[in-house]
Image (cartoon, rainbow, N blue to C red; front, side):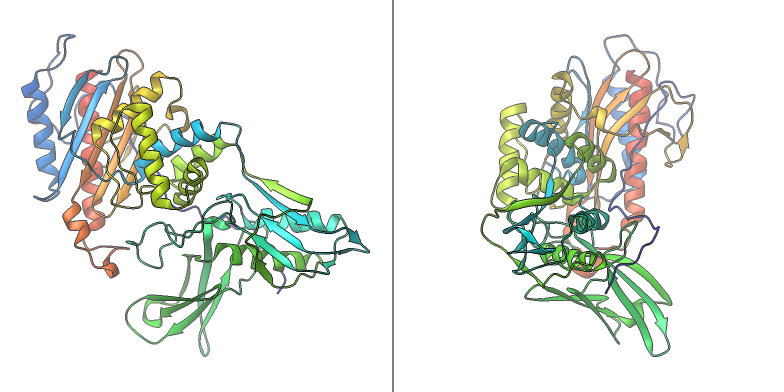
Length: 497
């Protein structure tokens, strides 16, 4: 099937949420128990700090089993100004990506880019490659359908019309990983596979519409300019109530079913791809056909590829990849960069290598099971997270320039204009887990480093798999946790800056 052109934006998984706060606010959206008084330069009364924060935590009503841990410290001296259960190991969620960014910058360097190449094992004669054509990945997590279209166009510009041999894909630049976390529901697009050959964040677009005989469905790899249909991912509508989705794999296909009762009148969503090299090869074959190039079915190549390079595309440089990863919280980017930085053979070993690096570099005892924070078994204390941010900042290698200036928000999350104090931070979210860590910067005076981890781990662990995509009470709990973070930051901005 030929590719058709469109003008629709590619979805990006995940959004970063955060805060920025005024240096001297006339009142809080929810006032502390006592009004802060002018304090001497030596600090604030411990009784005032503890009482005000404890009241805010109680008002958040996060549950008796929930933990609210935090630390706020002077950026220059490291003096701890306020803390609560700051030595308790907590799931960092996507706050872990800030550590991954520092790890990748040190191990790969700011000039690093991923490259995706087309190789030929023989010469081109009369438009035919005399040998095999190879699609060779280096692990680029940001490769998009439109870039594959550009590769196909570059081949056509060289006069290529076909091959005498095979069409091969190579994905061994990174170890193949079927999913980032085994805890997540099978259908969530933010938990894709990872390999050395990725496409569209390893997600396929599923669209459905009412039809005269039931349902019309499509699986495609849409970009901004092309919407090639995908053959290796298949969907079947089944008359049932639950589960909403089921998944099976056969060889290199993704076989899905969906409950008809969940479809309504029509819609679309992204689903994860579990065979990314086959997916990328499938899409490239279709895009090449649209350019007049006939290729056989893609086959996987295990050995290190060799051949003449006919075309290539490359990713943005590492700082741009990291900026987008931190701002949009793209899990696959974090994992691909972490795996490339460590060179480990498994995701668990790669997370352990980053943990060892953090210990050696910053003197902290973190436990990372991955690089995105999606695995809930990772553990970081608020003190250790703040120390990583602070030490990297003082060394001139911090992530603060890569983080978004989040703007002023009140305790209900509404943006407030003209804030003199700025917060640049990385947030993280899992079911019944919320984290935020970064910089609180007044226009003058003391800059602060903070880390806040809030979690009800027992409630999270008790969820059935069917509940994990949208757990009962989960969104309301998350809203209260985020509001508490904003209130704490507002308090610190007023009292300590």
